[in-house]
Length: 103
Length: 198
Image 1 (cartoon, rainbow over the protein chains, first blue to last red):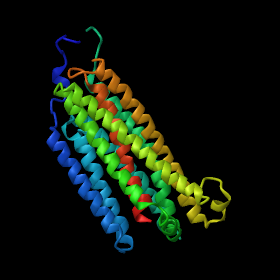
Image 2 (cartoon, chains in turn yellow, green):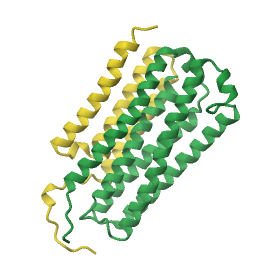
Image 3 (cartoon, one colour):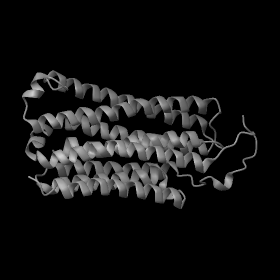
Image 4 (cartoon, chains in turn blue, red):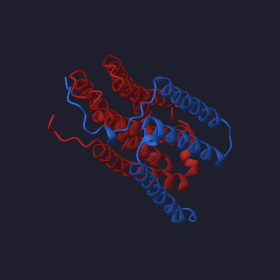
């Protein structure tokens, strides 16, 4: 339909992820999901929380870097995303400086 | 084509919007963690009643739908329009499966008298009450995002079918994909919080 030559090719991300690679990322995500479910069945007390959230963070990183293509974006977007998560971490972390010592 | 397109700007705008979504859910995550700290025992008791099987199934379904969206972008950029449409169709189908499972989960809770404002919920210990309230608020808001995302992806699929979104101009599909991945991302954290930790 649109045969006009593209003028902005240089600004477009040129990296195309293959079907195989994306499926591989999915497979790793499934392994991590199975791991976190199995570990949650074992009584580890506080460590259950640590494992569950660590695995969730690893899964989130895979989704962000590969499915959301962040690994191949320019530095500006990478910095913005990093900043957003650092701010969220500060927001939650600093609240626990207050909430944590109570009770 | 005289229409001005700014690929990098479109994508950056989408990310900025996603940050507001992170902030929205971030507030709820903060609330959850503060109450988990305050009522660990009650959260444990209330969490036991969650259906781990349905929760795990939904995790697989939603991560699978994230894969199909990512595949649809690859397909479009390689010019495989039919593949792209099949992948988008699969994504929307998986999204609907997710919502059907959620319907069964919520119904089971309603049958046990657990819904916001119910007499039974008021009679529960405060911590269990809070856990269930957060469950409804967070999975409800997330479910709404699943619904919006599947409508959005359906619209983009028609744009792809009509050639308005194509291998030269695909940022709309990429941005819709980003939204969908965010929905998946939020579920990746909701799943351990409600089904595993407690």
